[in-house]
Length: 504
Image (cartoon, rainbow, N blue to C red):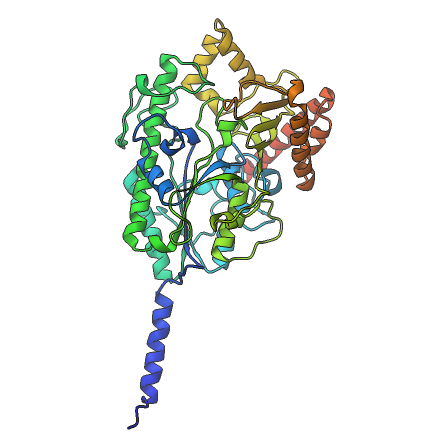
């Protein structure tokens, strides 16, 4: 009996199979979807699983940690947003990618995550922090979620908007027949906090799951414990709760898409909370971030990594390895893909940190290297009586500190450190996580100080850091003064060029 199919039928079936292959997302265990989720301005120790004393403040973050790998020693490289996010998605330090402040770099000499993922066959989409995620904007994403839509439907403080955004991004990738690489950037707990602007309480329809009174919240050791500070912190912690609500809605959209098992979820905070000694600094709480990765079938649930130190500089090379995409030349980070696979990487035992300037403020270049126990910071700007200028000084808490410093010796010492610093700082993070006791002149620590200086100097030299010359002349006050003035003039020039370009 002849079972051969007619040629026309064979051709028709072949066409049908081709159409199905085109429509079905190309996802496998070796080529998973990628869902990157960030929160904005949140301390690591604000999260329940990272030690927050507030009950039920972050149930979704805690659940995500329970379902994947939680890193104990994870840091971002930069303590503020625009420069910090560009480190994450270029795999290059700020002085290498040139995004050192809040101005665009129109002709970058390097590829961005969006470019590399698109070239690798991924569908790219983003919601939130759009203008701060790339060296210039608009950028060539496949989808900017919320663009051209009703603003009320995609409000950055509304948890429901994160469900809609994630679902829309996944659906668009499905229609394109590609695995997705989505960046969902949650606005909270960035100011304005829930019902709190920088100056006063305000109306706010987006109510978080948890509400707190000033009396029940924790006050960190680097801030004074006063009613005003507690009041502002209470609004911050309620915003942390709302950030967790937004994460929950993002993950719910992923679950309802049916693609959670084929998706790597990466979660972190872009830097510390917007208070003195956290945001826009290189202290321990400035850069330490809650970092979790969930990868069903690849990472054992409940894994708590205490062996390795990972950095935002390492994010891009790691995501490229997850996606099976070749690394471009010039990456400065170290992929920790093998750690996700359960292997050891002994070289991941320190991280480098960098800060240059805040939005519209004077330039205050800083460099640091942190190991598990120690944090060494180089502040070339801290000569000539210069005063630090950054976001933390716009808070009620800072104004409270400035008022108390006139009569309270402890607060006066805190304010002196925050406002003026010294050229070199060295802290024992295990004994002093708040980084308040500078050990740079302590004879017992000179061997460790020398080792950390050497690590930082080698990295600065290797990456052609323009601050390296100042580091080599760190004991020459006259040199440092001239260096910082030249840096400031260059920053003013860059901002002027950007402003002129925007006007045109």
